[in-house]
Length: 245
Image (cartoon, rainbow, N blue to C red; front, side, top):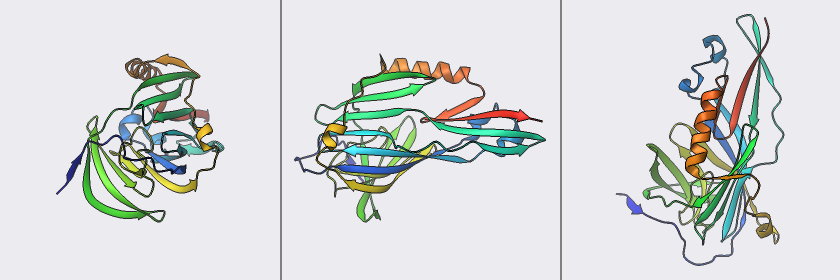
């Protein structure tokens, strides 16, 4: 039996804060590579991994890229050609104010930076009753559906804040692991205790062109149609360059 939750706010003001490090794994779908020759497609990685970080307090959170160096280009051979494959991570951050139910998403797209500001949408979570442990913390499983994809989240009440990675949250505890259909998965790899200056580090982003979520979706659609030699997902571009024959 599952319990239907329509949770956004949490009760009380537990003084808990910290920093969570996540690995975000993006799964490459065959449909995203239709424009790439088959012999090259066979050499493509089935997934890419990015380092993400979540700063949180009882009142707000900031999810962004972790400060890591970009991986060097890979050179692969296929059909007498040498292929250079470069994976790069675009700049992005998501700020959330829990009490105001407000969020600001800052996203870089093809050299331009955009700001999308709106309300934090509620999600109808279903508790499954499943439990396990992540990084020594007991977690519970909850699911919801967005754009026909089932989202599965594992959260812990050891940190009673409605924070989480990507665009999810609103559960009565910090989300440490999540999967988004068969497109992407995110899992915590480390948790640090927050210091006295953490609150000042969680700032609402202000740089970029302000657009609505609908306008940004249309910009993404147009850019995707233009970039036939690239494919992207949740912030990662994989660029293939032919060096020689």
